[in-house]
Length: 215
Length: 283
Image (cartoon, rainbow over all chains, first blue to last red; front, top):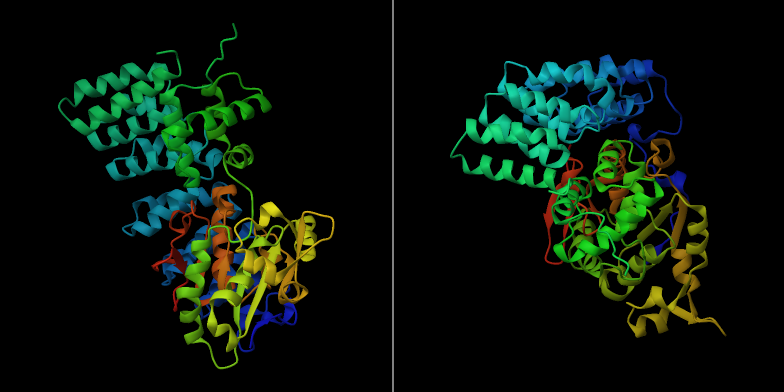
């Protein structure tokens, strides 16, 4: 017994594990059928291979609703992130209302990677009746590379009534804020006086914004 | 008198480090201000931005990760050497391998993958550490695979010739036992027995097809590479590594990297020598 060199890379597969026969790219039809396979690992592999097919977005989104195994759902989100595009965004935005925190967090992570496709949804999300959805919209912005983020946050500051959403927006502005945001940030302190964590967040944001402008 | 203008002030440094930490898991304390500033200045010059504010906006918009990768390269130490982050090798021989061995059938080899392996210091370190510090190597077969995307570094790895700097952390007894000095050069060559024990191959972690055949690993060393990927690639790589592992397999990342920030697929395991990640025994 000792250090041994394996025979060859191709011999690394063990018998009796169908999910490991992966040498050839498979077509979407067979892969979609495998979404119903009883073995989670087979479903995971099918989902990962489906990331090469844009037409798989709808079936993958549909599969999310019924897939019981977390690590398989993870693979769905990764494949959707890989495919990208408007259809993915339309499929994932409704998940922001999911009761399942993992679903919501995964949706947020993928949506953060699709800035152009998110643009048309963002204003709507920031005006959503559900305060949680408005908060998630800011979470998305925190990882989104989009030029309109300062503008969206500025609008939010003038209309948002929820303290926690305002605090989240102020926190984001500490990173992306412009001098034009400072009056609205100061306005938050007047609207929500005597809230220590908001005061801290707003003051930090103002300091960091001013710092870049010789303030 | 020449007055050096600062690229950014303390508040902007803090803004940058919060952002960089969120993206990479790497935190710069206050003492690193000058180090960070110099490197940001270098990148600002390379991409022709004359203010930190505009460069930072550009960096933040760089969701494909090109500029982020360049900057991360500058802000991290890419040096590789034998026994780097040795506490992880200790964890391997003191805790991980015994647990893996208990799950193995008689005669079944333990499989370890070093990826990316760069010029070979990591896979050879694994081999040396097992031979020196894991007595069960006398009763167990262990196969070590090593992969990198770069064929130039793979060639160097296969040659197994290293300068003094690479070997600086190796105990002299280990160097004497497993290496031979190259006449007239300040270099050492690792023994053929060790070279032949490692299977090298080219693999692009970011390409699913490229590493589909890399399977059934019990331990993966994937250190200091995930920080360079954009978010989607990081997720994809984590998925790929997960599928490359046996149930209950372990993955070791670089000291600043956190799998929990990338993917919930793995469970954290705390051992006396290190905190590492494990693929659950059942899906």
